[in-house]
Length: 464
Ligand SMILES: Cc1cc2nc3c(=O)[nH]c(=O)nc-3n(C[C@H](O)[C@H](O)[C@H](O)COP(=O)(O)OP(=O)(O)OC[C@H]3O[C@@H](n4cnc5c(N)ncnc54)[C@H](O)[C@@H]3O)c2cc1C
Image 1 (cartoon, rainbow, N blue to C red):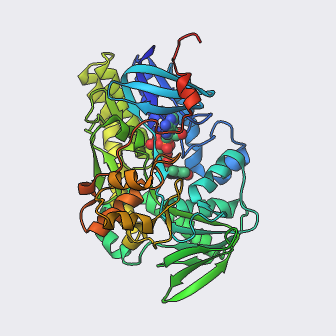
Image 2: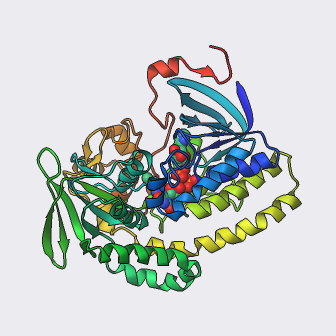
Image 3: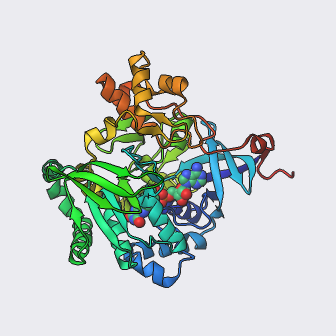
């Protein structure tokens, strides 16, 4: 079986920085990513993008080029277009490349799988013509595809505003920006403002996007509740409550977004310890200051360990790269600590803004925990909130029992889309803590794999 000193899963800023740092310190290192080119979510397609499109995505996006150049100049090996579908506590890794499943092993593994958009089931969210803002941004970054008949963007979080700003520069008609962050969030965020001012450039950037969008005449509705998408075959309009009345906007396309959460299914499938974060409203891996998880030889970094953004991901990546070089015998602890000093400082500085952003963009509790009975929660198996409530009423007390009974979370996405919603719905119905009910127990394959691919499994590096 192919064996590596260090395998890094995920080629975003966290994974790239970890791989570059470790490889430059002498570690033999393989970076696996399901995308065709390095960059992750934030710097998606950075090496292939036409200059004009890169320009409209903004200067932050273009920074990714440097990160990729440093990675390319290192001795780290890049394995693109490869999906990791399993990882166990013994660091055996299941991969899928060119339709071929294989296994490999590593002395150390760094999970850098990043973030995913928080799935929020609202009325009409499964209608054709309703998609997430992140999906819209992926189409823009990777293929230059933008809506041509206007769009409503709705939800909360910095990415929503960023996409609207990028669309405006791309000439897209934005029918409305519908902000679902409750107005009271401002007051709960206010105590965090002094600390956030230490990373004021983020706040300035957000204000700039808002001002430019308002100046361009984009209609902006804030303090909105009860969003629903309406239509027969596909979306025709959105409706929401604003200033005490119902407002309807005709639109052929709705892009929703409610913040991002760690893509934690791979780390959870290893069995390493996770906890429910009440401020980020998601499961997070328990890690030490070097990002080591509770399982020896497995680290979790960047947004996959908790949402910190691209800059924090880069610093955490360098720290984990140094730690790996140390634990694999390439550098001593003194050299590791000296080289880590600046990144540790910058990481702490960059994270100052997080408590403010988390409080400001926190989704309304009823949005997450009180979907209507006929709203689909598990899209793959078409299980509604009503079916889940019935299962709870029948005595099923945690998400795993409900999964056995209803099949929610057993479809092709393996629960990635309904995991958090189920946890929050169950806790709300039972009136107890989410942590008490556990989340789904995640088992491989964490990404779809056919029986044929599994039957044809071989060890990476083995001749077929
Ligand atoms: C859709 C989306 C768009 C975003 N756009 C922006 C933006 O424009 N600006 C911004 O500041 N922040 C953006 N963010 C937030 C941003 O992702 C992070 O702050 C930052 O990229 C985190 O870096 P990372 O290295 O931790 O993870 P990422 O950059 O997300 O990189 C993770 C990488 O892991 C790969 N991966 C995941 N699972 C597997 C697997 N099982 N097998 C193989 N590879 C895998 C992914 O393909 C990805 O390349 C976005 C988030 C999302 C979800």
